[in-house]
Amino acid sequence: MVKFPEKVLLATAALCVITSGVCIAQDTSTVILGGTGQAPHIQTVIDGVSDALTSSGVKVKVESGDSKSRSAILDEMKTSGNSILLYLTVNTMRGQRGKLLAESFVDGKKIWEEEVRGSLMAVSAEGEVQGMTKSLIEKLRKRIGGPGLPK
Image (cartoon, rainbow, N blue to C red; front, side, top):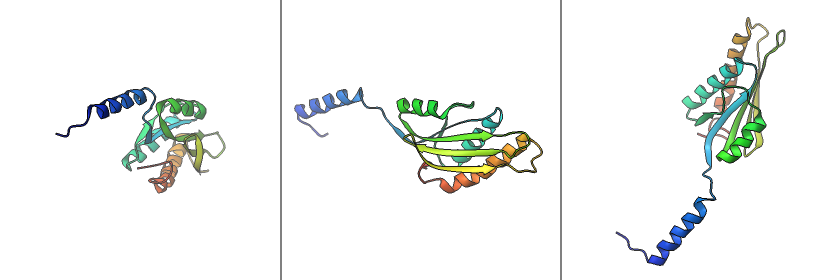
């Protein structure tokens, strides 16, 4: 057993007490996943992306299964100590090709984005969303381990 002088122990204890009330433990490796879009499509995309990232070794926390504004999530992240957001936007309009946008933010700053479009041949909105999700996941897998998607 190592013996430390009493003054060193008191100074260390005082430092721990002073800093413990001020410091927030930041989780810099967890990716917060959220987004916006029409239900149930946004839930389909969030579930698919979350499952794919998790199975690839990325630590993911789903912010909400419902639409939530990017600014609201970023504000909540300031108090939680998280620094990485992957924000998904699903746009599906009858008679138009769907669009799925993934934006990565680190410390509130956008560092990259990926966009995929739906098929003109899609029979249903659900099928189009599933196809866009699959295409997005392929693009995201190439970014795993890089900025915005740490392992």
